[in-house]
Amino acid sequence: MRLIDVLVHKKSLTPCPIWMMRQAGRYLPEYKEVRKNYDDFMQFCFSSEDVVKVTLQPVERFPLDAAIIFSDILVIPHILGQRVWFEPDHGPKLEKIDFNAFLKTAPLISFKTMLASVADAIAKTRATLDPTKALIGFAGAPWTVLSYMISSGKTADFNTVLHFAKQNTDIFSRLLALIEEKVAELLCLHISAGANAVQIFESWAIAVPPKLRNLYLYAPLKRIIHSVRKEYPSVPIIYYARGVSSDYKNLRDLDIAFGIDETADITKLRAELPHAVLQGNLSPQKLLNGDFDTDVDHILKSMQGTPHIFNLGHGINKDTPIAHVERMIKRIQKIYS
Ligand code: CP3
Image 1: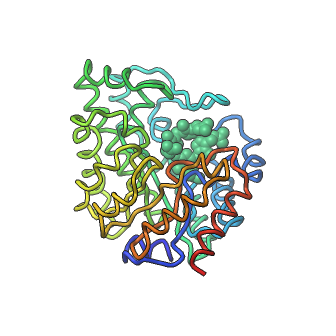
Image 2: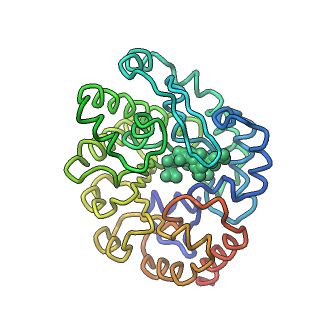
Image 3: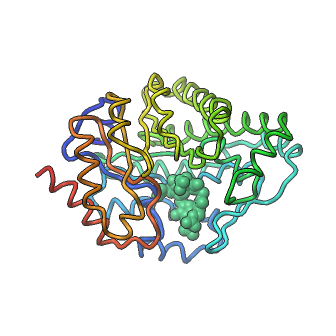
């Protein structure tokens, strides 16, 4: 598997492996066709057969090197008892709950039972997927998941969450510890079902003030990595934390790959982390607009001869033309041919 050659063996491949964050999603007409059958997005996430189908759609359409299992980072609160739903154009909504009561009931819930259909979908996807392509499992990181849980959905700023954390130190630290444990459990479940690598999404890392980052982001991350590696010592882990890539140099001893958003200076990052696997950086907005050629060339030039995975800086926009994705992939391959 080309992706694993880079992630595990730190090879520099030409052309480099390619996948896209949110590659299974609404920019694909065939995804929308399946999505139509569900009013409830969460129910879709637990429908094994359709999960397999939409996970495979992008790799069937494009010459990508990996599939990422179709699911969501909000599956964790949902199965722990905080209902999650999606309203069109409003992003996720989460039920307002009493966290004291939640902390009593949530630890009793069995992930293995609740996630049987997800494990089944992963096993079936792995069995169907071209053996040269990797299957990626994933979870949201605790701070990001908890932000959605506390703010009951997408917030414009994180003052509410930071305020809650300050006012309810005990509940917040117990919630963080619980989600941390569940994230590790979910990643292990994905790996045991057949995922070849896992990615941890800390999409709202930027909202944490620098002096709290160790407590809220990096200490939980280290414990999650430790738990996962205790079970699966050699599984590759990709850490994608939006807006804080200047901290990655301090995490170099963790032996993980780093996902980079579109605001990062990748030349600088490569200099700071000469041996680490780096992934990402192309602006989804530019992929949408079509003015991405120079950036693709710049990324490839900066990463030349080093372990690199081509990806976007964030999830692909739902209005991205298919032709732009095709052109991006051709450009990456052509530069090397
Ligand atoms: O293809 C893949 O990447 C795999 C599936 C995947 C989804 N969500 C499916 C999805 C993955 C890896 C995610 C991760 C996720 N979910 C993150 C982290 C990555 C990021 O984008 O920062 C976050 C923050 C979420 C929470 C979430 N789920 C949001 C904010 C939304 C709404 C997005 C929107 O544009 O409306 C979702 C819903 C969601 N998850 C969709 C998909 C394909 C779109 C909803 C739909 O089909 O109706």
